[in-house]
Length: 432
Image (cartoon, rainbow, N blue to C red):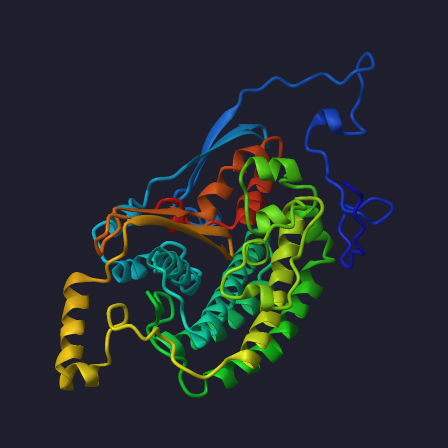
């Protein structure tokens, strides 16, 4: 890996003559002014200390318990403990119709519910051989990119607090509220959206939605620029993040990382580009890639991804076609209430769908999408009924979390907080 040069704008005592952030030694053996005895510094004997961080600690970003072995302030070993939620989403899904699974996905990664809804709907539609309408395709792209932005804004704000910066948290959450207002306009809910249906969406966007979204797309980059100006060349931020929690490209691939965690290590893999879905191959956007694989690069990658998502949203708004949002198949989509109350055939379809569900053919299907935290996969196995015999999620948070012990070993305890934050986990999909 090549060297990195960053022009810093805030002076701190921990800078060398060239203005680069340096670590202040904490051990006597590293002190340049320590007295020498017989040409060598005497070693200090000590015992390792075992401490618990979490499972109810803000820095664990959920009910994650970290059992940490410390040698002074140096992390010797980290063991993540999960299992405090007992959600059981995958098992619950095996006893529900495919459309009834969608509300469960709101509660896995609850920071990007609309993208989760899209992921499970795409997997069910592949299993059933359903092709969605052009308007539904574009609206789902809008839903996914809005989810990416709000998820990254939550990460950016909470990580800033973890490292001592409060103002970027306020800026990020202010913009997040604007997206939540859009979600509420569309779905009636701010968090648990349940947006999709097998074969379409629960509702079309309301009047005035596109105007509000265009205003967001036009003004949101200004806030990103402010956050960039405050953090990117800040010596404290650089000192806390550069060279911390490094994962090389080979190590990232070996740990099956995905999303910003993988791309920050220099691997340009993005499901939207490499395995396109929802016509992503027709959109013009860049995939930001890091070089050093540390906390600093993960920050830069997520910041740039917000800008690229804004580009995609602008293109989606310009190409949004008219037409229906649902497929024209009464065996898949519920008829309208007015038809169900006035037409006997529509009422029969309505009754059969509600009571029996949408039946899938015998087989299996897997669909992976580029969620904010990485590749989110949904795998269905069908026995020919309206309920899957197996529903399996590939949760990016769970897989990315497995790299934490490797990244934290040898760093300071304060660095562990920054490293854990950089993974960007949500315990709903870790302990699903």
